[in-house]
Structure formats: C-alpha cells, structure tokens
Length: 291
Image (cartoon, rainbow, N blue to C red; front, side, top):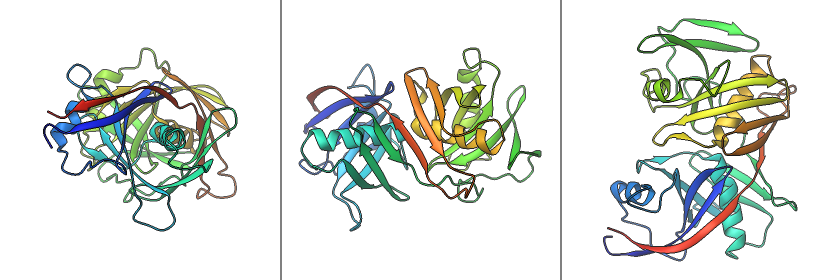
C-alpha cells in the first residue's frame, strides 16, 4: 500500500498516545507490519505507543471491531487506555450516537461508556488468572502463596523478582516495589517482557502501594517499552494487589501520564468484571502518505 494516503486522528488516554484509523471509511488492508511500525515511529512517522483500528464487527453483539498494533508493528489483544479513546473517537466522528458502545476485541466483547463528565468507563471483563490462559509457564519456578494468589520468582540477569501473573486480555507480570521512581524499569522491563515463562511475552508492571486505595504504577509494555500509562496494566496491578491482600476496591492508580480509577468487586466472585474509568482526549487530526 505504498503511496496510499491515510486519514488519522491522534489521541491519548492519561498520556498513553494513539493513532486512531477509521477502517470503515478507508481501506486499511494490505498494510504491513513494517508500515505500522513506521507510522508509530516518533521521528519518522506520526508517533504513538499503539495504533487503533475501527472496523466493522464480525459478530452480531458488537457495533464495532477494535484492533490494536504496538509501536513495533505487532498486533496485540487488548489496550485499556485505547479503549477509552476508541469510544470517544466513534462518538466524535458520528459513527454512533450511543453513549455505551459494545466493541469486539480479540478475546471478548467490551462495553465502553462515555460519562457526562467526559471521563470514559470501560468494562474490562473478568481477569484471567489461570496460567494456561494468560499464558504463563510456572514449571521450575519457585513459588509462594500470598493472600489468595500465588507469586512466582523470575530469575533475571543479576537478581530475582517475585511477580503475580494476571491477564486482562493481554498478559501482565506485576511486582511490588518500594519506589516506582527509582525502580529499574528500563533494565528489568525488557528481561521480564521476554522471559521464557511467558511464551507470548508479557507487560511488566512495577507497583508502589501508597495505601489500601491508592498506588503508583509504571509499566514496561511488550512491543512498546515504557509508556506514560497502561490501562490493562492498571487493572492487572489492582487485581494483583487485591488478591495479595494489600488493596481494597476502588483504587486510584497514579501513572506518569495521569490518574485512573479501577474497581473490582472480587468479594462475591473473581469472575466479576474489572471497571476502569479515566480520560480520553483528541490531540490533532491529519493525513499521511504510506512509505
């Protein structure tokens, strides 16, 4: 598709930034992994953590299909902050008049609601806690029980870290740190991302607990590196903290790009959905020619 002009919208959710493309009114088929990566490149393209595609659904229950590409050009299953931008986009573009929109993603149907105050609430579905579905291979790893969940020790180049594995449609390895500002995110993040225990790689979360309803969080995302915020990472961190007995719902998650509110009523069932509320903002629009 070299030479094709694409119309795009640049958006962000708590500093996690996106290129949003309308695949209903323009043809996005045939775009290669290398072209996706070039669009996301901050010096050679538009620049973004992820690229979001708005498409027609393939199932009757959804209004839209929602696909995500990381900045390395690889397609992934889920993006929480992107979900909020998605519903803001389709409403701003007049693609729907509904305040609550059901969208098809790789693993499920998400329910996205734009609130009267401009914040967006996303029903992220129930967390995935079984190793096979995350996917996570615990064989050979040292483990211990903390609260209502298991922790596993990952050996890195010069030390080991204890993590809790959680999926919110994409895999996360969450660890507790004393201070997120001094945590070795740039050093440990890539090692955790590519650890053999995670056959599809993993997002590495570094969580500092401030009190039972408040945390700080940094996330090294697979295929993108550290981002200013990660919606699924915030959900996974709160789930991990609640299961480990350190947090109570709701929890305010402070990221470097802004705050998110995460609620999970796990008391009655771990299969209850995780609810995420946060901002979504349009930055600018434009056109670009594919190289």
